[in-house]
Image 1 (spheres, helix red, strand yellow):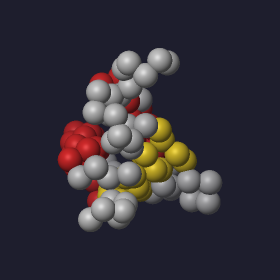
Image 2 (image 1 turned 60 degrees about the vertical axis):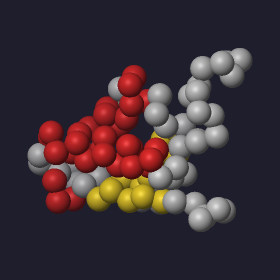
Image 3 (image 1 turned 90 degrees about the horizontal axis):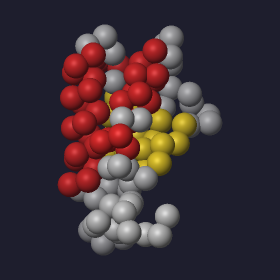
Amino acid sequence: MAGETVKIKLDLHDIFNKGQEIDRALRGVIDEAIAKKAAMVEIIPGKGSGALKKKVLRFLDQREIKQLYHRVEKDGDNWGRLFVHFRHDAPTGRRGRGR
């Protein structure tokens, strides 16, 4: 599997109105990305009112979650989609890199 980039997708359309399930699904997909050393997770909150996207961004902004990924990218072409990028090259996390 060397050289392959693992990409995981989470579509939240089916559980958009179930708050705890959304958090559980988001945490699950982040844990899966870490376990599989995925470079990126695509999260699709859908377009709708934008409330679900805000909820996803709030979830990702929690301190204990934020330290698990590298950055969040909002899709410029499709505002109903987010990408969460991971770096797996530093097993110690972000500490000790002179930042």
